[in-house]
Length: 209
Picture 1 (cartoon, one colour):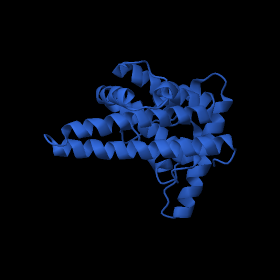
Picture 2: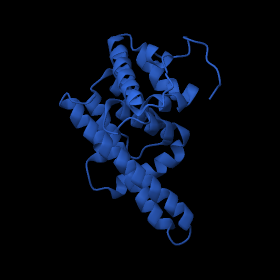
Picture 3: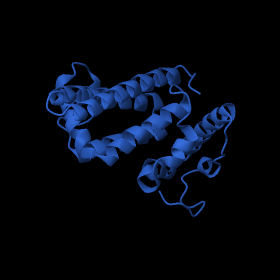
């Protein structure tokens, strides 16, 4: 990530201009919740969609470090925690769409649930189509029904997590280190899925803050 920015042009919204270093956990939590709420409100108020598109493209241009500074320490089942997990999923897909597509397809075949339908990817999905899918989900989070976007992201994580689990089983004997990496990835995706689903329910109930 570049060390310097030309402000404010390269920042997507005002909240990103107000990063505050803090070692006080209570203050960090307050900042996380305040920036998440302000940013989402600002983007949703922009009927042109320009702010949303900037946020969707943000990590591709700038990396994820500054978003991490804002939201990575927030409770998983909170507004900043949900936004952080959306950005993590997006960054992972953009970073390695080929592996994502392989794991997603394996999960789609193996997982006996409606998650592949809810996620909304083609069957089978190419790497490019999964990149487009996560950007569409992000767009829905910023401009559409936030709960639906979280549910779609959760379903995506479940499908890919299933694929990682089954692929790990394939490598257990011949490549145990790779199997371990895939097992950890599956556990991480499963946790993201549970947190995003819980956040979606909280948003629908009007209690996600």
